[in-house]
Length: 306
Figure 1 (cartoon, one colour):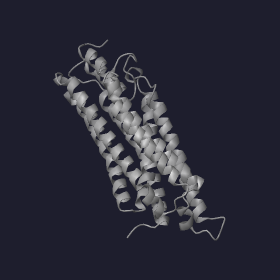
Figure 2: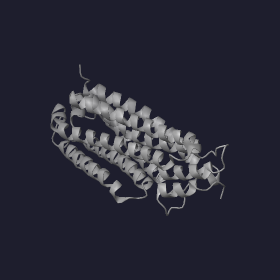
Figure 3: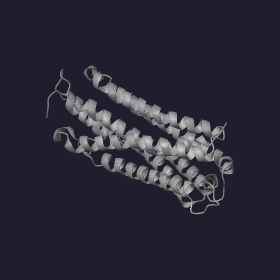
Figure 4: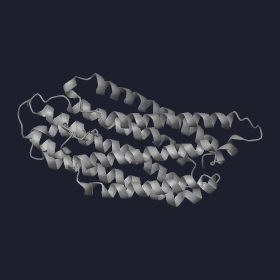
């Protein structure tokens, strides 16, 4: 038995509020770590804080609009308009804006992952090509889906948008898995001869795998609901908006917490860890001039604090 639109929207609001709360806590922790940690442990915050702030702004706007939409549905100004009829009116400005914010947030999350891989691979232009193609496909599909909102109602929208939603889900899943795997492989290949940093590498790899698994699981549930013509897809979609920010902050925080602490067995672990943290957290490297893995290789050749 499928969820009614009323129940799906209320469930979506509850789940989004829950994930948004987690995102807000992680965002505050990230700000505290970034601005109140020892100066030498902080890489340049040229990209990480603006990116996290933008994600927070999008997620906040999205949940506010969801609350306004629910308020208008269940406390209507027109008594003849039932909540179910209101939620079926997907051409309403609130619904269109929600979908637009969802599209921007997911594309932003995918773009950040591609950028991380691009920096870690010494800014090789060919590393961006697969991601650019998939992001372009996602953008086109989501624009078409938003276009359907202007004339499709209720279940008709699900039927009309299914091919495009399916293409978006598959594309974003492939992008997440492919680029996360590329980052993990690059880390191992760059440091395979440095046995003394294996322990500090593990949290990085685990953070990437866990974060990718969380997002991919949500996308898989979205694909399943879409295939079943279920209104549950609206629940998953609203949940994904703050979840993108949760994944982003989770990676940054875990890398900072595990890698900024120098290894007791070696004095060279700290600069290596700091640089890797800088690279994976969207910065261009500790100096801002060199590629990610190239700078890692240069720093790992030193065995004393600079």
